[in-house]
Each structure stands twice: as structure tokens, then as C-alpha cells.
Image (cartoon, rainbow, N blue to C red; front, top):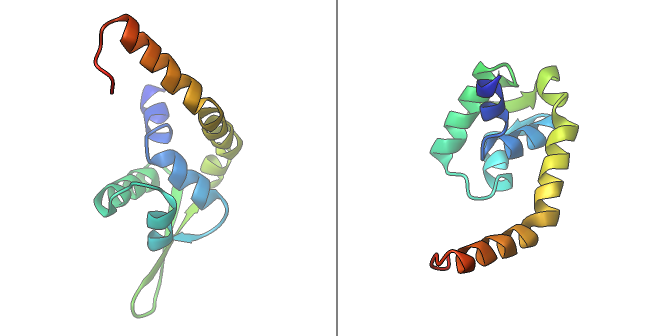
Length: 112
């Protein structure tokens, strides 16, 4: 169970799975949509999500090759939960930041 949660809850996996749940998405589109991800990390995460059965990879036979990723039914089942999680994080981002700053102040930690 832990391994599955680590995979779908990973830093980059959530954004990729949300994007791919809307329909086929290309590598470069994912690179633009998932803020801060490097090409290497995107490649690794896509491979792992495909390996775990959460993404389908389709290569169109053209020059240059066109590769698209689509969420599998198993991944689409997660969509509402992932959107809820990201919405929660966005709503509480400032409160979490303030709580961390207060904790650090009380415990003598230097500001981050």
C-alpha cells in the first residue's frame, strides 16, 4: 500500500496525472503544465507511472514521432481525490507557511 501511495502522491505525479486525466497530453505540454519539473524528472516519473499502470503511452508513427500520454481508468479513478488534495493545499498554503514561521520562531530555528 505504501508504495502505491508514494507513487501517486509524489511531488510530480499529481500534476501529471491530473493533466493526463483530461485526455491525451504530449511530453512538451506536460513539461509546461507541471511547474518546476525538469525533463529528466518528467521522463522518470512518466516511466514509473506507465510501469504502475497509471498512464498509457502511445507513439504515433510519424516523423518526428508524436508521443501522447493518457491516464488509465485506474488513474482516472483518482482524479477527484487528486484535485481535492491540490485544492486543499492551495487554500491552506499561507496558513501552513505562517504556522511554520511561528514554530521556527518559538523553537529558535532560523527563518527559511
